[in-house]
Amino acid sequence: MADHQHRSFDDLVAEGAAVPTDGWDFSWFEGRATEARPSWGYAASMAGRLAGARAVLDVQTGGGEVLDFALGRAADAPALLAATEGWPPNVAKATALLRPRGVVVVASGEDAPLPFADGAFDLVVSRHPVRPHWEEIARVLEPGGTYFAQHVGPGSAFELVEHFLGPRPAEARDARHPDRERAGAEAAGLTVVDLRAERLRMEFHDVAAVVHFLRKVVWMVPGFTVEAYEPRLRALHERIGAQGPFVAHSTRHLLEAGKAR
Image (tube, rainbow, N blue to C red; front, side):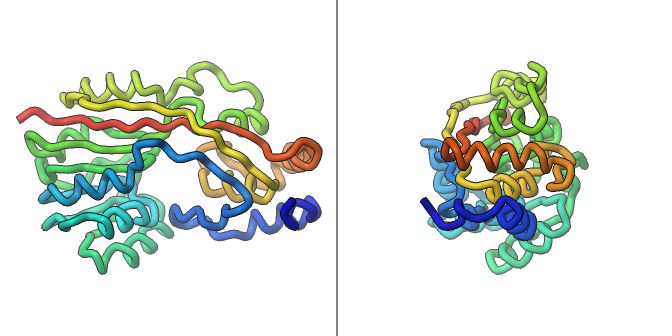
């Protein structure tokens, strides 16, 4: 058993609360939490799409890590590269990471219209958007263009969510269902050409990892703070000590949709 699993509840919670949460680099979790990855390898697949594109938009890029990785793997870079992000610390992080690759990062809120002209891009990509705005995606795609994305699926990590919030209603579990997203894309005039879903095992080896995860992925337990959820965190710490890692399951789907010529 790792040394950190023998540490006190207060020490672990304090550590989880102190780790910076900007960007989408999850390397801090090494040895403390694991999550199986989807079989399709989204970032590497994105690299192949980038090589054949002329004008690309990455929606809700986070700290730019996924686009940076994909551009590093791509045989050729598109002539025009843009990304949007709504959270100011991530805008700064993404700008620093992506500017050397020729990417313009635009600060744009998750719910705001995309700040680009109609038909500006032949490829729009996104990894884990809070929610896809299908009408805007369709609008900025040129005829014949493609949306290629990995989305969070329904009921993702709900074992963890329900530990803190109690049983969730059915509509909360189904909010990101692939069938709903297919319908949304089609309603906006896109044609879904590929849709694959997987359920993937997650393990949390200590309560610090849970605290950091819930601070980073803020929509899981809205308004999460250590103080507000101290009793539930303590119960989780004791459960891990008695039973081993806390197991949950993430859900992901790969979605590709095209705009008619």
